[in-house]
Length: 497
Ligand code: HEC
Image 1 (cartoon, rainbow, N blue to C red):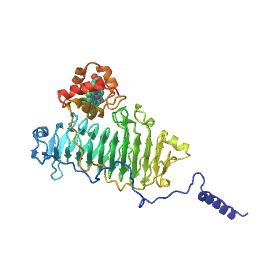
Image 2 (image 1 turned 45 degrees about the vertical axis):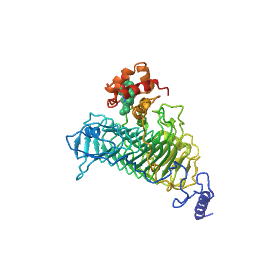
Image 3 (image 1 turned 45 degrees about the horizontal axis):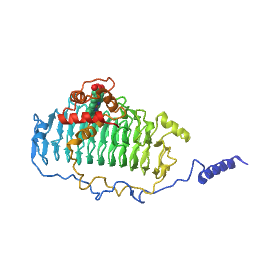
Image 4 (image 1 turned 180 degrees about the vertical axis):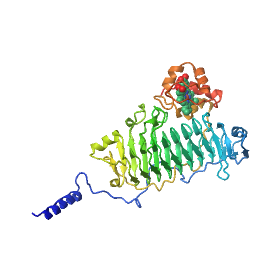
């Protein structure tokens, strides 16, 4: 046999192995995402047209000029009124506890109404009313929240620029039917956009960068996250369950057509907080969330992995909750563009990769059990841990425009007997869980300290003093009225799970 023939034979054997399908080289299933079925699961609204929350009345316009107080205008306003805030600097906390208030910054020649917390104030804008619209503000240097919703339904938070502001940038908590769009949020030490315990949410066209977490869908259901750009965060887009909160699931989330780029910023979250466990270099993270669809995103340059799907055991900073299913079930990965992810990953991902003899880049990693997950065109990705993913029987989500409710949600009406519960859910659970540490200590720890002493607890939340070296300061809750404070103290102390 001459030398030339030997080479040809070797090539034939090699090619034969490839075509016949050795264990590593199964002929790929190629699915065109240009056609094929649309996703038919998920929340079914009667009418999928984008909802614009209805105003109960068309009211008056209140003008706020520099030197005036925005809060004074809110107090003077009736439901249905619009408050226009002229360009200038305002250093205050605004609390909206009425329905149907539109708080709108006026932009003139690029100048915005700027709320400046001076590094001293906790929150810029808090609202508990329904049908609240907050638009066009620039918010900077607050310590707690930029914009926080506390149990209001039908909210719209649009076109705000939030820079270097505390723990959460935009944080609607316990709201149904809300839109968060066209905001720019950066420099937040927890989540730039944090959807907490909410339903029917649309997060679109936002830019989030230089935060620990970019966009976070947490203990929430029926959310679409689309057309956002998340870059230079520690983690770009996250859907997960925080254990120990009263709502135990995150499900039915569509993450589509986002740019998720270079989320490699070193984690600067408060030590012990859940997000402090996110490895730098995380593109999209799905943790204990079910029915999540990932479609049409451009995910590149995230050094740990492009998409991480895992169970709660992955997060070392989490205290388990027996009532939360720790697994991510029915993750559905459609076509995405994934490039150069996982180039400098963490040992946990390397370990999974090694069990599959995979070395090098990692676009997708699944850790932990999973039921009913699927993918199309898996050959496109450098993926590990997805051996039990089936082929999806749909290729797109075109039939779901949004999960918003066309007619709006019923405004939440809080009966006096529910005051403590709603304040607990809408306010305290942003930082306190029953079982483990979040931003603040667990409710169990607090119960041990204040058993039989709701008055003492009220005193503390009115004027918190810094107690624990390894925790941030707690923001004063003195905007809540005295009855609500006592109700929430009693509720927190009586809580059993
Ligand atoms: C923005 C986050 C945040 C929110 C919202 C929040 N807390 Fe806290 N809370 C903290 C932090 C952080 C600490 C620990 C502060 C320290 O040790 O200096 C704390 C501590 C406490 C303590 C312990 C006090 C002590 O004597 O050690 C109580 C009681 C408490 N919070 C009650 C509440 C209640 C009630 C609510 C809701 C009305 C609430 N917190 C909302 C962050 C928050």
